[in-house]
Every structure is written in C-alpha cells, then in structure tokens.
Image 1 (cartoon, rainbow, N blue to C red):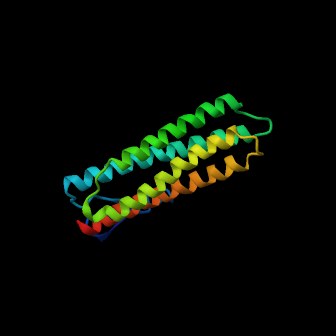
Image 2: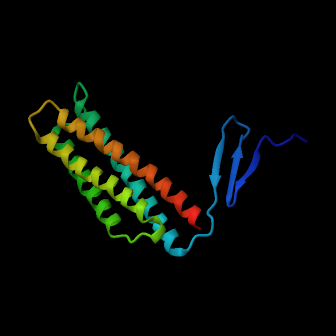
Image 3: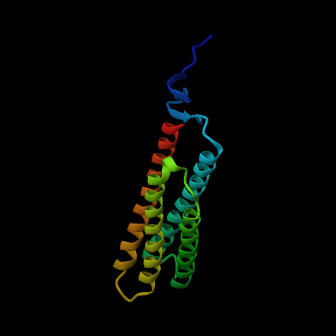
Length: 169
C-alpha cells in the first residue's frame, strides 16, 4: 500500500494544521477552542459582517472599473444605483456592528473594527459623491482606495479578534 501524502501536525490546543493534500496544495484548518456562547456569537456576527463587507468591496471596485473602462462598460445611472446600494449596505453593517456589545476582553478589538467599518461607510458615501461630482474621477477613486483599505483592515482585525478570543478562552 502507498503511504499517505497528507501530514497532520498538532500546533497547539484546538489547532490542527494539514500539509500536502497529494496534489501539491497545502491547507490549514483551525478548530474552535471552547469559547463561551456570548463570545462565539460575537465572533460569528463579526465574521458575517466581514463576509458582507468583502462582497460590498468587490461590488464597489467592479462597478468603478466598469465605469472607468474605455469604452465604458457601466453607465452612470447604473453605477450611481449600485454605489447607492453599497453606501446603504455598508452603513447598515456599521450600524449592526455598533449595536453589538463585545465581550469585555475584546472591547479594544471592537473599537478597531468599528473604526475600520465607519471609515468604509464614509468612504462609500464619498465615492458616491465623487461619482456625482464634475472632477476627473480623482475624488471617487481616492474614496474607493480608502474603502478597499478599510475593508482589508476590518478583515485583519476580525482575525486579530479571533486570536484574542482564543488567547482569553
């Protein structure tokens, strides 16, 4: 019989890392350390917010790229409606996060999450204002770059929050 090409390493409590799936790929999986239900619910909620924020980031960039394409792939009215939807959804996500009460050990992480998401919401509104302005697109593109960075920062802070929760479990 052939030996398995998959190797599992125990790298800490509750963590299993799997290397080499036989097809040249590697993967890493992390199992949950037992967290109290309040913390787990909080983490699940910020994960869902992050997932939706990344969808909105993709939408904003896709619409902007189509609007900037030569020849234009997305017309102004369509771009405006889609930017408005991103503004509305991002503000709803910021409001949802603002309504959460983080576990005490994660309050600092929560403040960082809120700052990143608030910046994304402001940036989405600024991108829409830039779309409607008469400038050459600089205002819109700067705002979209800011949104992309805020969404990236939010995702990083979600990971940091998970790590902090695990460390405090």
